[in-house]
Image (cartoon, rainbow, N blue to C red; front, top):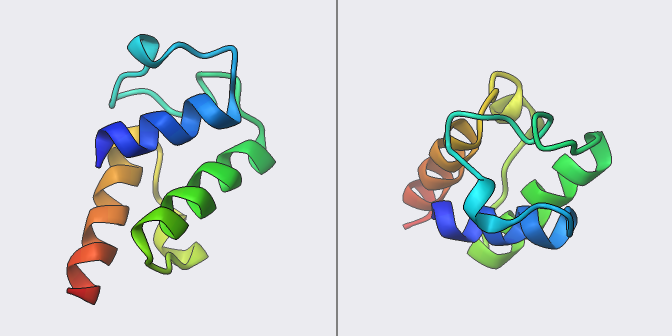
Length: 78
């Protein structure tokens, strides 16, 4: 799941190298604006065939937090 999110981040932010992404940082730390952050969420959700509502993302501060939300949504659809 982390690798999928990293790939989506690199697709949205071509100047970011995958090796520079750590779970304890935010996409904002990587220079992502709000549209780029939402693009990562939407593309990740699409690839996983899940729906993630905005209220679930409200408290997400780090990439690990996003991974946790995505994983929970996957588990709910299984």
